[in-house]
Length: 432
Image 1 (cartoon, helix red, strand yellow):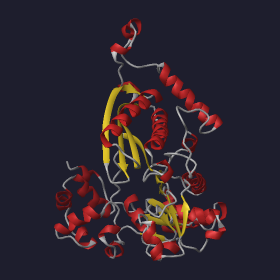
Image 2 (tube, rainbow, N blue to C red; image 1 turned 45 degrees about the vertical axis):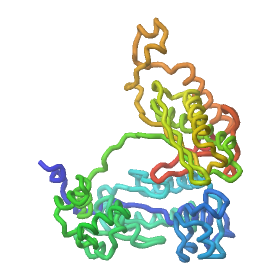
Image 3 (cartoon, rainbow, N blue to C red; image 1 turned 90 degrees about the vertical axis):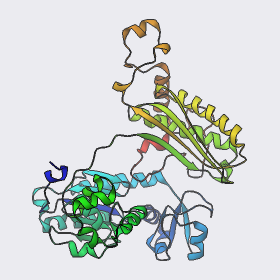
Image 4 (spheres, rainbow, N blue to C red; image 1 turned 120 degrees about the vertical axis):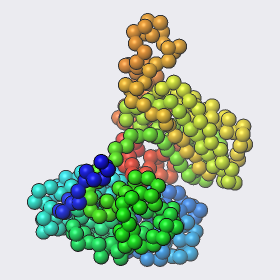
């Protein structure tokens, strides 16, 4: 039997989705009254060659958006105010905001730093009750967090449609897509307004003669599967029609950090200090997730456009020292191959991840008695224990209290820890 046939269309309002409006910029305006009502761009570093990672609605009115180069943004808006990103501040606001949301409805899933999905239960599914919950959330955020931190809320039969609804009215919007009565509303949207349809997917749809949401709606599910080239097309078709298709479970595959370097950190010797700190932070996350890794990748990009990447592997580990040695080996190889004068960006990735139960020790690295007892890693070795001790010291006494090598200073006040698209850093990461 087809997987999708086991699901049925939803006939009630099952989900409330919350999307914080221009979150980073709104936090900055909430924190600094001088920024309110002004066009603001949040930037990763203080240089015109960087790009905006967030823009206030006043800046968006000039056409500035995430990804806009700052030198271009200043031409579009000479009065633009650029503010250095403070990821630790945004995480603190994130915690406060969703603690307040919990006072009104349970947060079923944190989707990103500025998005969350809440399942409606029982009488909450009645339209008047769902609208009342949304109103209480908005009022609670105004009173407990600040009037400049606003959100758009979507209410719909499934999580997919509820998220789409949040984009239909911004800022501070509230949109309901009622079961069996929302087709005409989404027909007005463009294909790229639908979650999951980016530029490449839109081009693929257009190559197949699909230019509007209505044309996509009128496909049959098998045709959608053929257009996507996988079952994901069929899943998309059913979600668009209100089926509540569960999210697929995913396992963490990689842990990584990257950084575009401040100008003063671009000489190789300074960049290596940043790379060392990123490596320790990634290893700390690996231990926090209780995972082991076998591979380490270093990637660099030079100011002149040169690029370099290489991978190394080792026995399963989670200690700082193995990763630091791997970084040193790869860094020396990079210097030999690339001979860089200034680096623009560095990125490192720890992957080939395994749970402790999946890890076996290398017999050649074990003492005879230990090797005879078991091949399964049950106790952390001395390097892991030392790495864990470093974690605890950092958490208790603050970042830089103990480090391997020099702990570099940046204008943002921390290295590596930043908010990714679907990952919200834990507060302790800013002290590692």
